Image (cartoon, rainbow, N blue to C red; front, side, top):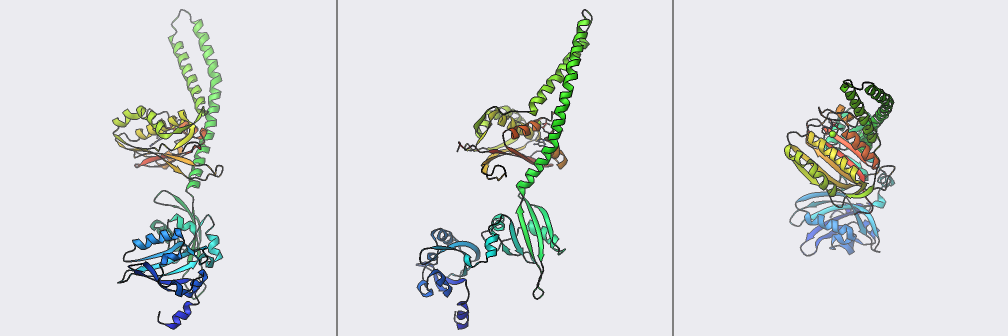
Amino acid sequence: MESVDVLALLHLVPEILFVLEKTPEKGWVISFITPSVKRLGFTPASLRQKPFISLFSKESQKVLDQTLRAFKGREMKLGLRVHLKRRDGKTVPATLGMALVATATPRAYGVLTLLSQLSVVDRILNQIDVGVLLVDQRLRARYANRYVRRLFSSNGLPVQLPDYLKQVIQEYIKEKDSRENLEIHTPDGRVLGLSLYPLKSTRNGRRPEWVMILKDITEKKMIQETLVRLDRFSSFGILASGLAHEIKNPLAGMRLIAQNLMRSLEGKPRDSVERMIRQIDRIDHLIKQFFSFVKPKVQQLRDVSLPQVWEELLPLVQERVTKNKVELRVSLDPSHVIRVDVNHIQQILLNLVLNALDAMPRGGTLTLRSEQVQRQFPDRPEQEWIRIVVEDTGYGMDPEQLDKIFVPFFTTKSSGTGLGLYIVHQLVQENKGYIFVESEKGKGTRFELLFPRSKGGD
Ligand code: ADP
Ligand code: MG
């Protein structure tokens, strides 16, 4: 800092610039700091040779201490959110950026920006529930609001755009035109909604930058897809139950006639009529069963712990598991207690597990796990959820097949009924849960159930 001119200039910057040195006795100490530190109530002279972390609040000290301890070689830390301690003891939020260099005495150069100095726009953009990102022509992030930083789990700037996103955007920005409502599928199975707008350069012919608006729409998509499926099949359900109703009356008539016929055939061979009556009774039984599927009723809501359910289920499937050489991976947490009808949850899981086993005739892995998740469904914002995942590495399904699986009587198996998933769906709904499914032909299938976490259980 020999140049007087530079020093004079430094008086003007609102940010707090600093140089640190690592000393054996006191760790990282301040060897230079700009006069702007007066904003915190200190004079530069009073801070010289003081430990750097003494500028920060307790919480920030912990984070910084770790960062500084872990440092070796050469690195940049940018956009760390910290709290500075003013001389009067109050804390103020700031962002910290610094470059650390290991020389004979390790040094750091950096800047602290008080958030109160950041633009109002930035503060507003950090409050909203969509991502706002500014990128340059080479797809480097120039600005990212909090939503984006969270989405790409980055502590601060510079946000690194993931490669899949770069690839997609690269295509679009060639056309130099805005694009809206693009859907991007991330490698980890999420769906991002994306709109792109070019910011036309005004000054000295700079290349345009792009504003990107991003939103994670995974949940929305899932619900939408389920709703579409549900809609289609609920009209099917109504149709089918209407039809069943129409069949019942003529069937009762037929049975009556057949019985009269029986009587009038006293003493003559009449086993064909007997057979007819048996067939009529079979249809009648089927229809009765169908009605009981259409309206499953919750019998008794109870707090049910998932490992218990599995304990009772395992004996029912163990033989098939062994026979199919399927590896079981079960991790159900005893603290995951859901409020459902215990018979229903058993039937749901049994059906999903049996289907998974059917899909792996020559072995594979069946995963059953539970986790607590946060989901914001518009009608039940406060609810906590337990997610149960039933996943197989079996033959999977293509999209057309996937579309039909909840439709009653849809089956691809020679001895299937096609009622399993239909019932599962009904039961999940009856117990106020949600069911989602993803599948890929040749790879496997994953069912996800969401049930309300019991308030009593912990
Ligand atoms: P069923 O098992 O009697 O065929 P379901 O309603 O249980 O009837 O399932 C309907 C169809 O959905 C199955 O025939 C199969 O094609 C498909 N299916 C269900 N679960 C899976 C799975 N885990 N893997 C692959 N396909 C599945
Ligand atoms: Mg089945």
